[in-house]
Each structure stands twice: as structure tokens, then as C-alpha cells.
Length: 192
Image (cartoon, rainbow, N blue to C red; front, side):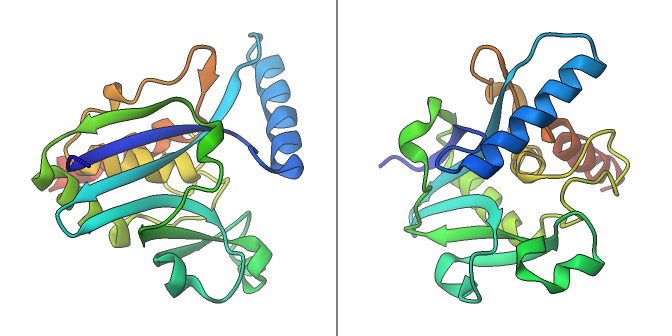
């Protein structure tokens, strides 16, 4: 495979009824509040190819205590910090060598190649352990939108120097949290 970074758009809740139902409820409420039609919701993940191998980058729930096997480099709380004592209220950020994206077969308009530059791909890979890990579903970083899996992926894309506009969503799609990651990464670049 040619070195570079590929973005995948996965339907929110692919492979699981609970997340899909909650996503539909969230989108129905948001659409009603903003008086617009409903969108299809997406979760994003990256596949990075560098000379040292292929890596999957994704934010997911914590399934067990064996994160090292999945390349876990960071964890954060879901909903509130006090609840994070329980695994069900934590998320993990993976930089998984030879990893898998469980619902890859359901990806839409994917992959989207963001770069073929091996130096940029390596830079993005190196940034994964330093991704912010505020509480999932909250706007602790005052970015105007909740922090979630999409925020992590867009933060990495912008922080690595890639153009987030290349990550076009599928038609009629929305990626809640995407803007939050872009805002937080842009702030850090302005300060740096």
C-alpha cells in the first residue's frame, strides 16, 4: 500500500443498535431545534500507512482492560469525570498497528485519501498520544460543539497540517463534533 492517510466515514451505530438509536434521537432533536431536515450521522476513523506499517486510529468505548493489545494511547471520560471510574463511562483512543475498524464494511464514500506524503502521515501518527481528552459529549474546551470521536479525528487532521476540507462527508451527512476538533487544533496552531 502507498504511504499516506485514509479517512473512513462509518454510519453512526453501525453494528450496534444502542448507539444507532441514541444517534437517531439526538439527530431528531437537533433537527427540530434548528428547524432543518435530518441528516445521516457519521463516525470517522483513520488508516495510516507509513514505512513502519499500517495503523488504525479511532476513538471507541473501552471494552476491557487489555488496551495495549489495541494500541490504546489515551483514555477519557464519557458524560462526566466522576463516572469514569466505571469502564462503561470511558473512551479510548487507539493507534493500533495492523488494527481493524470493526464496521469498515459499512463505510460510506470511503476511503478518502487525505495525503500521500509519508512525512505528513508519520507526523499525524506521532500526534495521536497528544490528542486532547476532555469529557466526551461535553464542550469543556469551549469549541462550540461537543467533543467526541469526530473531534479527535479532525483535531489530528488539522494538527498534522492537512486540509480538513478534503474530508468531505457523504451526501446528506453530518459528523457531530467535527468542528470542535478543528477549532481546538486551530487555536493551538495560533498559539504555537
